[in-house]
Length: 349
Ligand code: SF4
Image 1 (cartoon, rainbow, N blue to C red):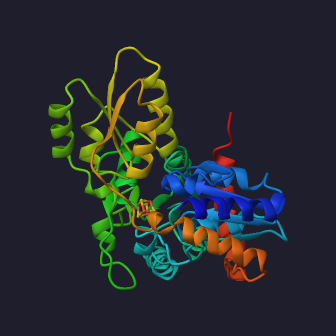
Image 2 (cartoon, helix red, strand yellow):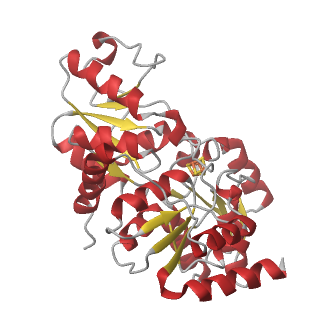
C-alpha cells in the first residue's frame, strides 16, 4: 500500500505539469488523495477549460471521462483508470433508444425538448443536443428544467425519474403535470392519449445506489440519533426527499455539513448519498458533529477505481501506451452543444 502511494507520487512528479488528476467526490480516500482537482460533476466540468495539462486522468466513471473529453482543447487527452467502470443509471438510457423515443413523440405531433442528466453517454447527449435540449447536473437541474419548461414545449427529462420528480416539485409541478414513460425495447409503449397534456415526460431510470434509501431508514436514524438532521441527494426517491430536512447535490451536501459543523444547534447529521463521501465528511467534521450515512451505499463502479489501476494508467501514459477516451466525431458537436447550453443557462452570478 505504502509502495503504491510512493510509486504514484513518483510518476506524478515525472509527468509534472503535463498531468492533471481529477477525482469525483465518490472516489475512495486512497484514490482521492492523489487528485489535483476534486468536485462533483458540475464543478469538474467547469474546471476543465482552465486545465493546461496535456494528460487529464479522470478518477470517476465512464460518462465523466467522455464529458471531460468533450470539453478539452485540441492536444489534450482524457484517460480513465478503468474504462469498464460505467454508471448503472447511464446504462438505462442509450442514445439509440432516446433517438427513437424523441422521433416517436415527434410523430405523435408533440414538440419536445429533452433534458439529459449529466450521467448519460455522449451518444445520448448528442441526441439531446440535436433536439435543442441541454444537459443538467443535480446542482442545476432546477434551473435547466425551468429553462426548458419556459420554452412552452413538453420536456423529456432523462434518465433519472427520482431527480426529475424531485426537481419538478421544487418548481411547483405535481403528479398531474408529469408522466413516467413506459418503454418498449426500442421505443415507448404509451399512446398520445396516455401522455395527454402532461408537460413533463420522464424516463423511467434511476440510480440503484440512491434508490436504496427508504423512509424507514430515516425513521430508524431519527430513533437512533434523536434530534438529528437528515439530508439526502435528489437521486433518492421523492418520499425520502420529502421526509428529510433537505436535499441537494453533492456540493450542497458538502456545504451543508460544513455549515452545520459551525452551528451550535445541530450536532447530529445523517446523510443519504454514496458512502465514500459520507465517511469523508464524517472524518472531516468529527470534532464538531456526529455525521453518519443514512445507509451504507457504495457505488461499485466508482469503487472500481483503485490505486493499482491509477498507477498502471500513469505508467502507460509515461510509456506512451495509454488509451485515451475517444469520441465519435459525429456526436462531438451536438453533445458539446447540449453541455455548453447547460453552462450558459447556469452562468455563476
Ligand atoms: S452512484 Fe449512481 S449515479 Fe453515481 S455513478 Fe454510481 S450508479 Fe451512477
